Length: 175
Image: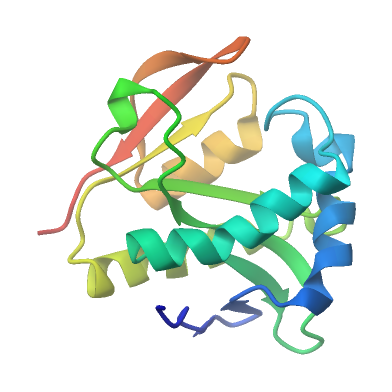
């Protein structure tokens, strides 16, 4: 079992999920604003549970994974993100950690995703040796495209994912 590192930024704490976080997590993913560009439909409680416990599985199996993003002062859930291997069947993702992020609507527009994911990329550079990272974004999701550009991701192609075509981005490695 791997210990999930705790990362602190100016406003956030990136940490492992614990049972007390599940209600806020499930509520966030049940919000159609959150899922509009992430799967297209709110998640059921069961789908949220599977993803919630899967965060620990990513760390145990891959040596990297997703963190909860929490407010440093109150420890309340702000969002979630990190690096993953979701076995999506997208050739452009094979062999690369996939960055991903989501933020609760009450926290949109405050730069928190950029703050959290900058810390994730710094962790990748120091803990994983700075290899290339990729991500996918549904077309039209301007906020995520903006975050990806700030983090140094550039478009490299597109790929089908379910009923949509997603754009695939890469952040060059720092090795």
